[in-house]
Length: 394
Image (cartoon, rainbow, N blue to C red; front, side, top):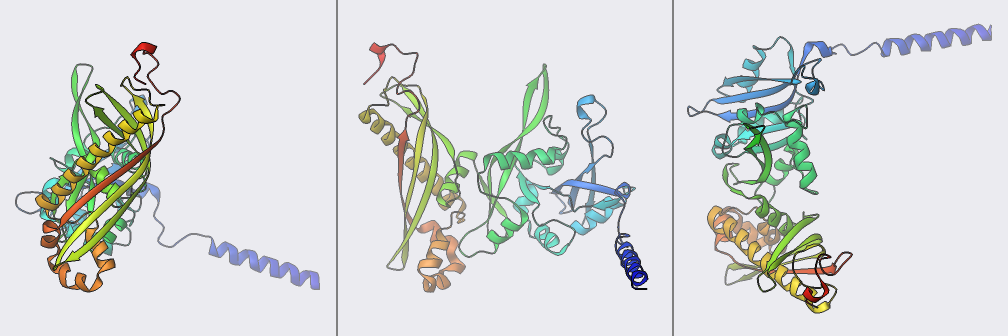
């Protein structure tokens, strides 16, 4: 009898498990979905939104090398709002739009300058849209142009943009979540990375490709006010303590050549000082370097020659850093460097008074910079191997 009861219990447990694993009631079959990996958003002269979606073509992903297809299609729609765009796009597709696998959003320059608060509002309310979607601004063009550019190394151009950024930007991220955090933080304005479409020569035919640029600067109203070059964006990373490694080159006039280093261990210290109701900032930037290229006649195993290199690097890096800060401070008047955060932390009382007019305070502030790069190693050799002994400066 006990054995019978045990068997009945086991059968009951099996039946319960089967009922719980039959699937979700709202499960959607993959064959019924239009999987979007990338969105592009633009705005025309009338203020209407234009959306362009990069949609996976089933059966052709991964087949590009065999010539069977691109692996994706691009479809567009317009609307008075972004919700309109999404609805009007669905009217062109036989499958239900599915955005949970979305990786990238490209914003055209016109829309970026007019403001992207509507995009952020939509993405903060829609549960299906992933909060870690990567955002980019296309400089000097519309997002639709990017969506239609093929990229030979990846099946999907939108995936290529994300991988470019991940391979060059160190610890910094550019997801929707990170942009929201910067936009809502005290004392710093947000930025987004730039993509640029460029022409290239291939087999005597002009083709288009794209590359990663610098950063688009946004004010507190989330309107793009300007751009940093890629090199200037490295300065920004250093100041905000987000720079991991970077290769720098300096030209030595008297030695008639250049030296390249791999920089690492970067650190930044921003010190705000308030005097007579005015704020000053002193920035100390430090790091270490390893010589990776020496195109001079200097034997860098000699301490005096190594000091010549260090002085040249510190001088050139300091001048470039001053130029970048001046551009941000005087031309764009938008604090993307976190100076306001340092005031907020050290002088919270003053910050409450100043924060509403921080753009003017920031643009009028006196800022000094000191750069200290310590070159610790010179590589395997001290001088270029192709030089004769008599040509080397010891």
